[in-house]
Amino acid sequence: MPVISSFFISTTPRTGSSLLSEALEFTGISGKPREYFEAEYEKDWSARLGISGHSDYIEKLMAAGMTPNGVFGAKVHWHQFVHLHAKLRSILGGDLSEVDRLRRTFPDLKYIFLTRRDKVEQAVSYFRAQRTDVWHVVRPDALAVERAAAASVTFDPERIDHWVRQFAADEESWCRFFEATEIEPFEVVYEEFLANYESTVREILSYLNIAAPADLSVLPPRLNKLADQVSHDWVSRYQELRRPVRRATGTANVSYFISTAPRTGGFLLAEALQSTGIAGRPREYFDPVIERKWIERQPVRPATPYFETAIAEGMSSNGVFGAKVLWHQFAYLMTKPRLIEGTSASGAELLRRTFPDLRYVFLTRRDKIRQAISYDRAIRSGLWWSIAATADGNGQPQGLPSFDFEQIDEWVTRLCQFESCWRRQFKRMGVEPFEIAYEDLVAGYDSVVREILRFLDLRFSEDQNLAPPRLQRQADEVTEEWVDRYKGIKGLS
Image (cartoon, rainbow, N blue to C red; front, side, top):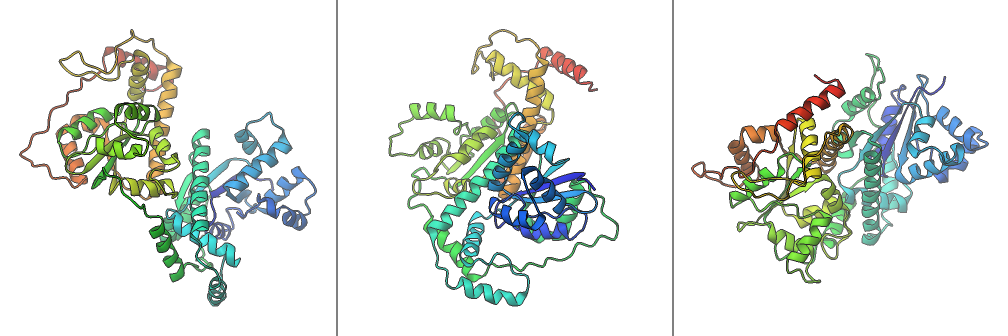
């Protein structure tokens, strides 16, 4: 039977991928996901399956990884994914894009993105497995063998640190691939998978459009957990060694990001919070272009990290720091080589160290069409905001731009992607943001701002009045006309 559908478990080592692969394989209807595309395993697979060439290799591996219902599955680490691309290029030539080569080879290809929240535990697990060559233990009595082998392995913070950074980089590579190709994977976090083993397997079957029989039984895990007290001790020792030697002079007590996309009312909310006097001064401190301007404006000496100055600038007198952060700014923030001198931990860990008690206010907008039109007009007119009853604004209109359906449609897609990126990032970090929609902020300005203050554990007396919004609404008759024209072309009611 030919392959009807395919999926990759896109992951990094020691994320529970063998546990998930076995769980899916044992259903008998979701392929046999194994590491078929590891360069070091090619000789073994070739000998076992009688493979004679490149095209034969892919064909026979897919047959080996397929269940009788035509579903093929594979477990794929990032470096294996890179190797697979090279293999397909040699088979199909260089005329097709990487995504087209994948789609032509693997029918109806879907992705399960499996991550692990605690990168230090992941690195310790990998380091010990490498040194002992004990990767999995099925029988409980075999744990004693693993423990004996592990006893000879000594703590090596430099190697552990290498794997922390490598796994974070590989995970970011997967994320960039998904974002660049507009692929929405099914995301699974190792820690949540352990807590919801059977329900996760069933959710994946549903995502893969595999009809599970009513009497399907998800077999319990065979693999034993290898982490022990030594693992926990090593994690603690590593974290203690990697703790910053010094803290920024402008250290805040509480930090928060307004996590958002353009034209969601981010400026409106930032002004409202700043006006309370107790919620920092949330501005766009972490845009690479704006960063250069801040450095020029502020007395930043070469020995003074930019982040210290930004935190001091964005902090109110009670020690609360706020920042408005668009998705591309957050991506830039996460990929900076070092946020604090002397550290080399993952981006998420550095965020926690740099911004104490970091919380997220997730600001979205339901009406993506009006959001896209607002963004398009602001970009092309140069007018981003204006203050009521004044002539003030951060730009001067350059004349009324003409309606451009293709550009607006692209912005709708991009803005949806930005929101999806934030949601995936929150899930990866195990974060529960305070979520608010622009439409609700406008309708309930006072109550929404007070709810956010409570979320930040900030005391603002009910007797105190919030400053009314200064910003003037920019949507007008042209906006409504463009909305109607866009919907008419899209066939929307």
